[in-house]
Length: 337
Image 1 (cartoon, rainbow, N blue to C red):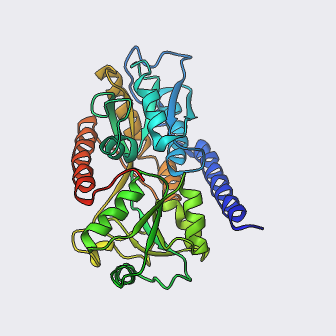
Image 2 (image 1 turned 60 degrees about the vertical axis):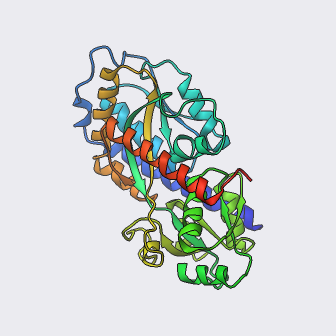
Image 3 (image 1 turned 60 degrees about the horizontal axis):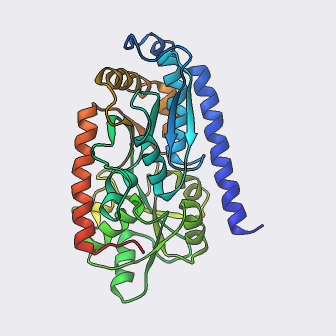
């Protein structure tokens, strides 16, 4: 069996695990959310609500969307469905939602790439600041620095020492403009090194080549835990300021590089111009769903911490990160490879 086939099998196993968790979630959701107050005109009976995801099924954003869809269906007494529109690091899905009717029936599970990073690297077909209306942050999580167990790199300090010795050190990412690339370039800048970027079309092929030792390291989302627990990859550190329960042996990278910190997030947005009453209804519903023990459990299994925010707080977070990534991109001379 080839390595790529084994990797695909592991991804399939992870997706199957997530489906089992979602099945339990459907049974275990409390009926408290069903009683949430809703705006009188929204949602209309029989009109489905679509949660659009910019990535294929099985990844973190998709797991979140499917967990949220179960809870939101109960909270709003509506049919909430997940629609995957992968491609261009989320730009295709983002543009699709920006162009949708601002009526609350098309929502977007947004990630930093298409909302706060790529608009600083290339021309995108939408205005990320006005084309979408923030509803709520839904989850936060670390990115995880990983290497092959046979690489000889056993810590962030080892990685820095190897790069400073003059060796050609490579890092993989799931594509240009992804949060994984930003995590690595922030590492480069603060450590005073220059790892060479190898972009891939998705995280699965990137991880495959790190497992094989073809690429030295990558900064992955927490779904990599199946590979670290299976001994295929070694977790060297997490990007968050504090430790992660999901990766107990991986210290915060900030312990090796003072000032290093990055918290990844996924949130939900509506098309720009969506009425405030609809946004408020959605915000209350998502906030309640993210407190459900069954939802928290499903998301934690994929390394995500359920949370919520006000629309204004989510908007402020994105504005802050647009400035942060623009500064990093300029100082590090990052371009699309």
